[in-house]
Length: 75
Image (cartoon, rainbow, N blue to C red; front, side):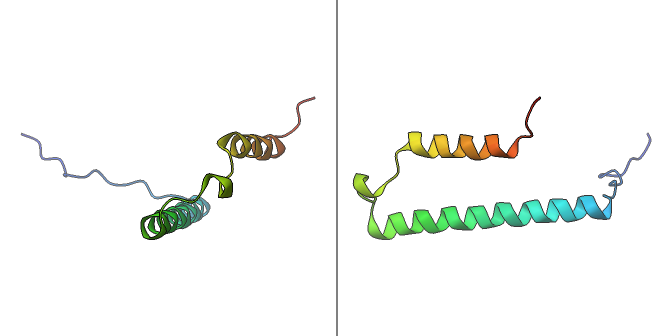
């Protein structure tokens, strides 16, 4: 019976790729921290009133506009 290691050798990333993965992890961690802060605020103070909230349709349109601005123009 052949013996194989439990975990095959990992392929190392190029330094630039490793930096990009670390940056993504940092952004994801920051997003999670902001989300957790919002949930903690809701738990401590309750839900905000509807008048203090932005309708989801407005949020969607703003996000779509940001995404469209990031895309290169098509000739």
